[in-house]
Length: 437
Image (cartoon, rainbow, N blue to C red; front, side, top):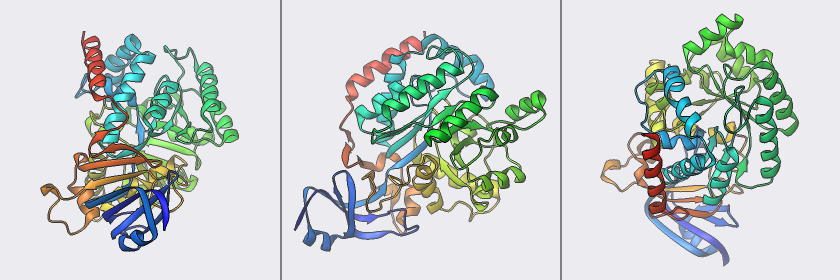
């Protein structure tokens, strides 16, 4: 009998790859932080002995969810400026607060709150874009969560850097520092076409090609953004990005609510990725990403929450449900975005967009053991005819009981193992007092 680190005996295992497969009464075998086997439970009990063994008789095991677009530290501004249009929200509320309060401490505490919320909600990897990325990375490492930490670039000065050149230099230094860390990747993250000019974008493209890094950027978030660019240059932002050479398989475009059929076809041909943030787009009335058309064209579409200041939560279960329902309504087709598609958007599609699908996104032998357990015995998910359907359309994040990242347990029966919740509550209350003053 082979001794391994962890055996998880589960009622259901949904590996995501192969697609639409659900294994019943199977066991996930974890050793050295990786998945080494997935087999029927009776066989597993004969073949393996676990140093730790979990019997999850009412649970489904899934790959950890991937939140493919966040501004983690903005949890500290949750609910501070609701029910506003994007540019009013940004220019008159968020940017002034950031200018006044942005600091290493702000990012540390806000990121801690975001990580706690994400782990509790079954997210094991997040793709971030914010100031002080070195702090975000440090907190992700401290808490044991996987993170794609964006090397942010913006033309105007902030407390973190004075100009685009300084942003790029500091980002490169952070990439060099973290490039061998097993939990951290560092894509470039130019903020948006309207905040980053051609010269830094060209430099980012050159460096991204040399270092084989993705580029993560807000694109076509609102009609206003497009009208502004057309008035300024006579072209739509995507056309400008194409001409600069950015749109290729390493490009991750966030939002994409304003798309023509020609733009969808060209984007698909380039092999680039979209991150759909349905709830943020709805709350800011930014528009609707035509997800069904994009998927039909062959574009890889992932899911993100955006920041908690524009969404108010980091709930990937909510995003899956909203993406599926909204996708049907926008397409005028009830068969568009079925439950399995939404689940893939929240797992393997995110991994592909971030260039991490060799490591995470599915419960495949050889991949890191990024695993979540969902208790489906709750009344809210009964009766249970199809676990995948119940997870997307009926389950809530509160049904996530256990979370592992690279085999390390970060949530044990709803208890966070790396977060001091009482200390965190005190810090967040202090920030609330400052920001509301």
